[in-house]
Image 1 (spheres, rainbow, N blue to C red):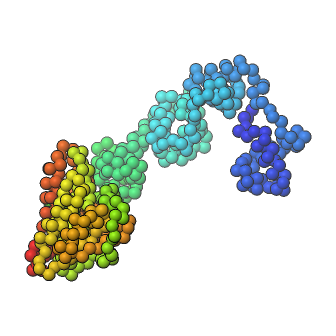
Image 2 (cartoon, rainbow, N blue to C red):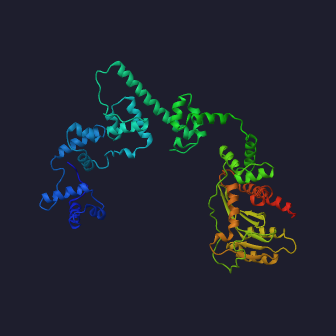
Amino acid sequence: MEVSMYSREDKLRAIELFIKYDFSPQSVINELGYPCRGSLYNWYEEYLANGNDIPDINPYRHYSEGLKRVAVDHYFEHGKCLSRTCRALGYPSKELLAAWIDELEPGRRKANRTHRGFEDDDRENAVVRLVTRKESAQSIADDIGVKRATLYNWKRKLLGEEAPSTMPGKRQDMTIEELEAMKAALEADIDKLELKRAVLEGTVELLGKGQGAEPRMLTNREKTILAESLRPAHKLKDLLEAVGLAKDSHRYQMAAMARPDKYADLRIRICEIFHDSRGRYGYRRIHSVLRAEGITVSEKVVSRIMAEEDLRACRPKKRRYSSYKGEISDAPENLVKRNFHADAPNVIWLTDITEFSIPAGKVYLSPIVDCFDGKVVASTMSTSPNAELVNTMLDDAAATLRDGEHPIGHNDRGCHYRWPGWIERCGRYGITRSMSRKGCSPDNSAMEGFFGRLKVEFFYGRDWKGWSIERFMEALGDYINWYNEKRVKVSLGGLSPSQYRRSLGFAA
């Protein structure tokens, strides 16, 4: 007996629409979202057979409470398997038994998954249990909640077998030769499963691919490395078939890997440059350093070698600190208008404040950057983002100006640049104030870019536990000095800001 998930009212509503829409089942389904066509036709026949009505039938009325309790107890005492209980007792249907369990013991029924809900590991384990023949196929199917035929479908897909014409059943009076043949077939199946698992594990562990990576999508070189690593335990022919690599391709890759590395010296130099920059350089900057040293090589080669050596530069994160405290004074006009180019030093200066949070506390950095070459003209650090932080920085930067130099000082709308001390100093040093629009970070994007590079190359990805505030400030000062003196910029022809100024005859 089938237990319907729809009430009498649901069925009557569907039938009324079915009649209203000229017996079009699709129109009913489109409006209600239920049922399927077959159920709708069955409901209509039941409706006509009962004098244009649907009787409200209790599906449990043919079974006493005692019989229901016997069936539910058998379910829990014999492995929580619906099929096993129905076969043993001869009643009821699996659907009705499930309804009884939910009624008498709510929340305790084992929810069987369909074969689509199983992970690859679950299927492989089930197939291993099947081919080892330590338990019957039916008991395995009952245990994991699928049909017996599903197990054999998994087996054929995993082992690449063709579907048999009949389902294997019990065999009696088998000869020794037949038993030996069956044993050999089972051992071959187990070997295939072990090979498949070894290839998948090697793809993840040896080659560093992600979970679920497909071995056949690897490069020929990676397939060759994987196959060679598994050769002691498996035949080469089986390995090449498992990874999808032709024998000639394997032979070519083996010969290529046996040849001397023509980039051996270059590889060493790239690693040295990367580590000297403390992991801050990507392939473009490393290429610029190599070019400055007279080494001719393409960026593509540098990128490939870095990938092979697993040299990865840091990646940026979002900055959080904001010094904006509202419109506390009149804002000057934006004179820069996102044109962050200057033809000479001390023409356009940019400034802002950024925050570093480490276990020992917070550190605030206030630098001035010259748009001519990106050099940090002056910088101050403090544990508090106060007026002294920015005012001292401006005093230090102004001390580098020569007679007749009056730069534009551009910043965001932070409160530090609207306090009397900052405004008075700008007037005293002849610095023309310029300010971004409210809430418009692109108006000061060159400064944001400097902070991004600073945090990627210096701050992110490092463990700052155990560092004192003083030690952190010293390391930050060392980075800024390295940034000015040694860090190459592609836009400056592979030179640092100080080197670039010296090459043009400006005092560094």
